[in-house]
Amino acid sequence: MDFQTEWRRGRLRSRLLLVLLTAALGFQVRAGRGRRSEVRLGARIGRQAVVTEWGSWGPWSGCSSTCGEGVSFRTRTCVRFSDGEECPGEQRQYRLCSQQPCSPNAGDFRAMQCSLYNRKPILGNRAHYQWVPFLGAPNPCDLHCLADGHNFYYTFGRALDGTSCHPQAEGVCVNGGCLVAGCDGVLGSGSRRDVCGVCGGRNDSCYLERRVFQGRLPFPGFFGYINVTRIPAGATSIRVTDSSRNYLAVLAADRRYLLNGDWLIDAPGVYAGAGTTLHYSRTYENHETLEAEGPTAEELHILVLPQEQAPSIEYEFWLPRGRYGDFHGVSSPLRQAEGVAMEGPASPVSAAHRQTGPQTPGIPHSLPPATQTSKPRLHIQTGRDTAQHTGTCGVCRAAKGKTRRAQLYCSSDFVFRVKILSRVVQGSETRLEVQVKQTYKNRFGLVHREFVWLPDTCACPPVLEHREYVLMAVQHVNHERTLNRILVPSHGYARLWSPREDRLLRELDGHCR
Image (tube, rainbow, N blue to C red; front, side, top):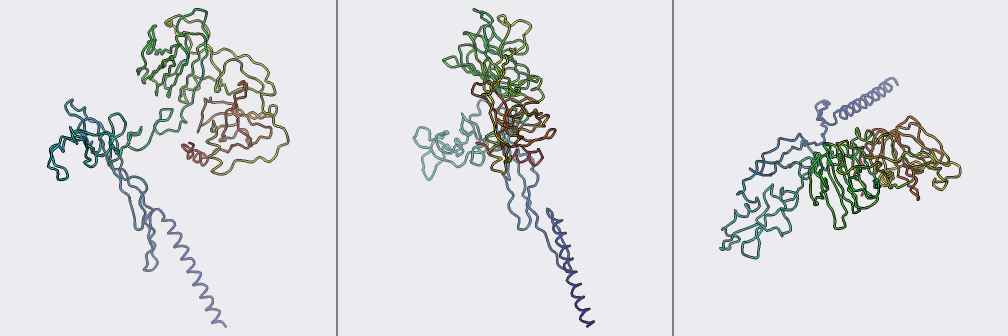
């Protein structure tokens, strides 16, 4: 009996030792994930396969052209271990490179490539031809050459890297394909500048300023320039439109006219000023459009030379966060208290600003403030202007799921990170005063503090004071256009902000179509 007991105990110890060794082996293999590791067990060696990854980019090559514009490239190596998969992405990257200007006698790069085949037989044909570029074939990055004086062309393979795809279009040929350089200079990267002027940005480093100017002549028979607005330095994506018989004018910070000044109307075209390029167009009906990509290096003043009563001008531009508050002040057309509405002309986005006070022709030496705002008349809001919600509070159904998040993101006018400063029940609604910390999507202008409304008194979606949330909201304008607010719909999106929430929202950028 003692022998059987000792034998059973020996087997139990052996099994326990085997389990411990197996667990230790698995722990060391998991700890070695991401690099080659070796675990020695007796004379046997177990190896952990390593995930493939790209090495660092090498240096850029020389330019493909000795003069003018060409292409350079750089490569990287895929570090693969046994049984490793291919690395995702491209192994080679191209960018534009500029050399010294070509001499006037250098000729076109594509024409030079075609001329290399002059007086050379093709496909056994003994006839010799002079070849010139042919641009009517399907693939612009194949070297299509037309036999001079004849009605046929021949394709001599691919055009050399750096050849322009078309004289009147962007893009250069690389490996037989037409690639357009992004704002980072890399061909085919697809990088673009956002409305803030940031290459590859997400439109979250600036705010939109959009308004409608509806002015009146200071007195009957007045003929002179009227100030419309001031565009601060650093503004981007500027657009001004006028659909009347009036004429827009642009004044620089040094009181020098850039467009339509000193009683002279300029022709439509491109004009330089304030560190940017102004694109001015005017139709036969005298409808004007002024656009500039920016950013502006100095202030610009937009004026109008009226030819008829009550000019109406729409303008918009984007400002960096640090300059938006100083320009916009603490007022916002969206910050409307309960029961109060603004009368007078208003756009769906913001109240129209009126110019007050006369202005002498040609702009006096002391430039008046760019925009004067008339104080709005106030009246008590009627009940029909407020959404009525009756009944007891039910279960607050929070928005859940990736698909629902994407749907709300695309259908919202505002997606932003806010800190709840206060929560007040007013009538049948709840008003939140928030501090805007970050924007992911904003179709209309915002200031640092805004009022956000919930359409009931049940605090649905639920939010707490002094906490930071991500809200998805819409702009609410009533039928009479006397109410213009930020509204989070019932059962809408309100989540506590977190790095994970931030990542999920950034992944939705570009998702909407």
